[in-house]
Image: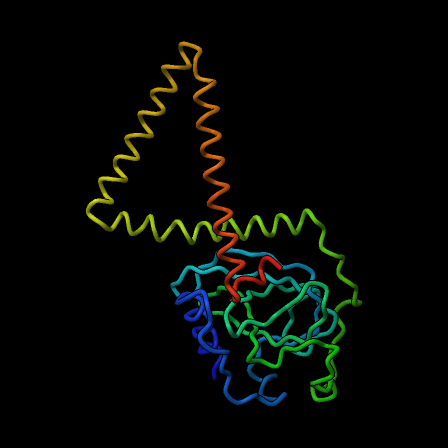
Length: 249
């Protein structure tokens, strides 16, 4: 299976449903020399950070995980001391964990969307010993290996909150788009816009009379509660999805 086929299969599986129908199918495992020839870069790196982001890949909007690795040794390419990979979070996704050290074979996403690896490559934990370093040949030292600091509570909270925000966007955007495409949805959106204009006019009138504080507080509380409910539903949907769950773990 080619790198582009693996990418397309992962994205298709992710967008078609929340539960995988089957495990990733990779085909024949390449030899070390074949993997070296096909990969854009090959290196040993330690995962320093993971972060959920929204991305537009192959004309599709999706959720991905941004994985930052600090490189100690390289065999191909010139990635520098750090590299950022796009984890596609599908059945073929590679389960990177913060602080762990990996031998990584990277490939280029189409249309300059970044670099990625997958479970169908020879990427693996460096300590596993499954791939003999001698088969790779002499590597070039980039930097002294250093352990990644443990994730702070603030960073973990921010990462999970960002995942909920991204998930909320993917829950709301399709529904809003369907409203715009339906005959009744056009009038509904027009009504919401008129209501917003009327609300602004009402606030201006109340502000002139000095009576705007209480209604402003009520509307703020309603907006806050609604936002928290949407974020909570989004977080629950992500936690229930076996492919998206790594971005909150």
